[in-house]
Length: 290
Image (tube, rainbow, N blue to C red):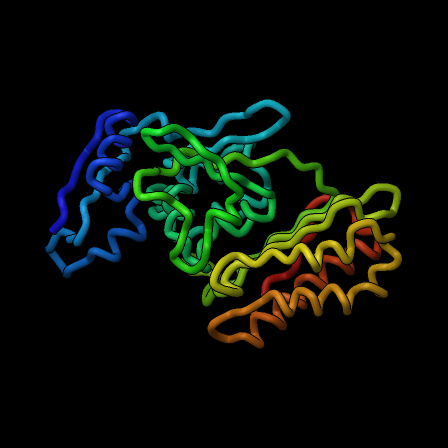
């Protein structure tokens, strides 16, 4: 069984990480399951862990220059869902994460670091070009979250690093869409999720983006598909829809239920675009639940 450390400062945590390779443990909603041994027995891990729940430097949500938002790695989904500083897509994803107990104990850093294709928060974060801030005793580095998550359960986190925070750029979208589909209406692991957003000015789509969770080994975002719609007039959406959907279809690579995930994603994207094309009121586009 690996050692357990409880650092009292961020500096101590970084040195422990560098010297022992101890894995950070906060909410424990994923790592505790991995170490589960049975009823009445404490979890056991083959590697050292360090409990970082007391590190205030990794907590909180704050507004930065130019409208950017920084979310500390130890911030919980409940805190994210209730913050007016956090972009809408991310609040929706946080509000739909599992049961209330999970939303009050899990952390955004853990949800990202676990790198599950079905994780709730990476999907809208990647839609918004979020960056992850990584810390080590050698300093700080930032990288796009889409580059940080390499695949299922794989990240670019170095052995001496911990996740400090997530930084989200400011966006002014005209239309917003978010949908999570699970096996039940609440407390569900995502079977498929989709975020989409569009900025429309004078009848022209200036920015369009979409991201899908649980549709491949990591969050899917097809820049090729997005580029098909950028710069087009909204009345031309029907002319470009087939090419756009084909590009998206090629990007999706689910391990299970491939046709269901492709068809459902196509349906949601078609609905979102049809609402834009018909001139829906700017704001949140809602699709009725199945």
